[in-house]
Every structure is written in C-alpha cells, then in structure tokens.
Length: 529
Image 1 (spheres, one colour):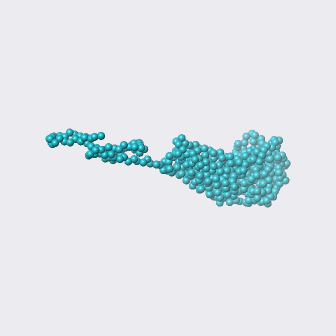
Image 2: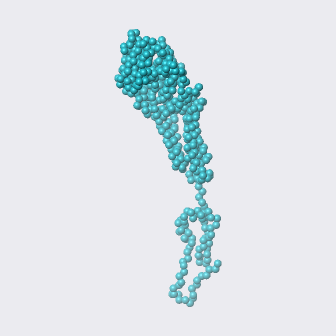
Image 3: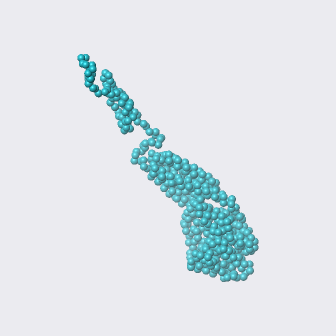
C-alpha cells in the first residue's frame, strides 16, 4: 500500500489557512487508556484467540505494527472451593441425595443391628448397635461424597470413627464400660458436633445440603448436652441419696432390702408397677412404730441391680423369698401389695403359703381367670425376646436426660426425702427398661397370681380407690376379698389409685389397714369389718 504525504506548496502564502487534516491517533496510548474499560467477555475472547492482528498506528514515516500481549486464562486451584467438577455438570446435584440416603441407611442399619440375634438383649447392647448403625451412615456420607460429587465431605469420617468405636466397646464389654463412658461421650460428641458444623459450613457449597446436615448435627449436640446433664444428675443423686439398708445377692443380681422397727409379724411392702421402696415414704415409718417392716426394690429399680432373667410374678416372688432369707428376716409375713405389687404378693402366698400370715391388697391389679390357658409372653418368639430388645432401645432415651425432664412431676406429696428418691429413680435408664419389661410380663404375672385359689381364714384386707374405679374394677376387688373367710373390703372415698400410698391422708388409711391385719395375726381374732 502506498501512502502520500501532503507537502505545502512553496509558492503559497504561508499565512493562508491550511487544509484541516484529521489528527493522528496513537493507538498504543488509547490501548493503555481504554484497556481497563474492556469487558471480561472481550478479555476472555482475546486471551483464547490463536491470532490477533497487529494494531496499526500512524507514524511519521508509515505504519508501525504494535504487538499484542495475550493474557493467560487463570487456572482454578484444584484444591480450592472454586474447583470445577470433573464429573460433569449433571452430577453436581447428587450431594443432597447422598446426604439423605446416607442418614436413612444409617437409621435402618441401627434398627437392624438392634434386632440382630448376636447383639445382647441389654441397654449396653442396644446402645452399641445404634451407634454402629449411625457410624455406617456417616461413613457412607464420607465415601460417597468423595466418589460421586464435587463436594467431598471427608470430615464425616470423624463422627463415623467416634460412633463406631463407642459401639464396639459397648457391644463387646457391656455395662463394664458403660459407666465411665457416661462421662466421656457427652463432651467428646459435643466437640465432634461443633467441628462438623464448621467443616460443613466451609466445604459444603450446596445450601440445601447444608440444611439437611445441620439438623442432624444439632441433634448430636443436643444429645451430648442431655447426656452430660444426665451423668451429672445421677452423680448428684447418688451423693444426695445414699442407700439405706443392704444390698443382697439373690443369684446373678443383687436386690436392695431395708428393714426397720421390731416385732412380729414382719410386714413386707411390695411397690406397684414402675415404683420403688421410697414410694412407701408415708407408710413404712408409721408401721415401723408398731412392728418390723421391710421395703425393697425389685430388679432394676432404686438401688437394686438389673436382672438378666424375665421378671414375671413367679420370678419376683422367688427373688423376694431369697432376699428375705439371706437378709435374715424370717416369717411369718404380712404381705402388702399396691397395684401390680398385689399380683406379686398373691404369687408369693401361693408359692410359700406357710410363711404368709396375712395380706393387704392396695387397689391391686386383678389376677387372670385360672380357667384361661396360659399364654406365651407377648413379644417372645422361642428364645428370641422381641419386647426385651424394644425396651432396651427405649431405655436409651433416659441416657440423654429425657426421663429426667418429667421426673419432677412424680412423687406426689411424699415427704421430701422419699419424694426426691422416687424422682431420682424415675430418671434412670434402668428404671425405664424394668418398667417396660414389667408391663410386657403383665399377662403372665396375672395368670400366676391366679394360682392362689384360697387364703383360708387368714386376715385379708382389700382396699379400693374410690376415685377412678369403675364397676368392673369394683367387682374384681370383691372377688379378691372372697379369697379368705376372714376378709374386709374397704372402698376409700376421695382417694385415687396413687393417693393410697403417696398422699398423707389416704396413706394413713392404708397404714391403718396394715395394722389391723397385724393385730388380727397377733390376737388370732377375726378382722374388725
């Protein structure tokens, strides 16, 4: 290309105005000025173009080619949060499904492990099985998120290891490690939960997946706080309520027995369903002023140890007899049973008739008809104890403080010391499980109580609550009174089922009935009706 340059005519008037020419533009100067105003799209296009034509600038003698500098495209850090997925855009949304699937799988695994025959039917075994199932869920989250998503959650291996190790210890060593683990796991789990929240916030970009994880981790934190609350509460209860009486081995487990007063016959108080010895806080001290009186805790209640064998009426009667013999408390006995306790004293009287001199049934549960065939305990299939596993699973809730939340509502108007002992007992996992087991064995216990067909002419008082008793219940109480020719059926107006032992005025009526039977035994005279 040829360029012509305009040269002024030598003969022209130098003062004449020259023809205006467009100004010569320095393109490089404009590039420096305009460069920052280019859009990121243009910059990216220029950076990725194989050839960019040189820019022509008008110089003094011709055109000068200005080389163009290509800006390299930034490469994201493969380990940073902006790392692009190498699995393709179609798999970016999988993390939410993996979170849900992992936790659902962990829950299902926990339930299956609790039901597995190789897991011990105990609270420790059930707790270990649940932890093992949850550990599997967290492990799946860690592995699957790394394998199939662009948001790897490797930190999920930490709660998996923590829960898996705890589960193995509980299943392998049982109650021997449970007590010290009660102090270890709450702070450790809380630390794991806090750390998991931080890691999830940093590494998980999906907002919906975060909100799937956060509630689960929050539940872990709440469980750890509840577990610490329960551990501290149990330790405080143990210091505030030292065991009165003695702990006696009855074969495989030990039961608590506390006897006070002196005289004969000895009164033996049998608490109702889910209750303990302290429930007789109004009655035992009053009876002790007149004769010898013994209160005790069935297996898993109060200060007594849990038992491995099913606790039906016959087993409870056998353990009580062993307890009294080894505790050097000879008969004859006046047996007092409240509610379910009535079934157990009836079974005792049927099994050891020569050692029972009198009986008081305090709004007792009615025994089953002796004509009905004996059925297998519900939830028991051969040697597989379904309900035992269910009760062990439910008792875990007490380990995280749930039972302690409602225990303050119990205890009625018992004297403060006994009331607090009742509340401390209700808060324990052992009491929760033994209570459930007691109701599971109810049908069997009712049938066993029916084996007492006659109490001859021994003194028998049947007390019935005037509040809440329907016609069927009153009829069953009348039937109980017919067991002896020396009996009295007393309906206590204004008294409820629990008030007969826990409210001072109604409990005084129960105390009087006991003393009436004691007096009849001593004098061999009929009861005053």
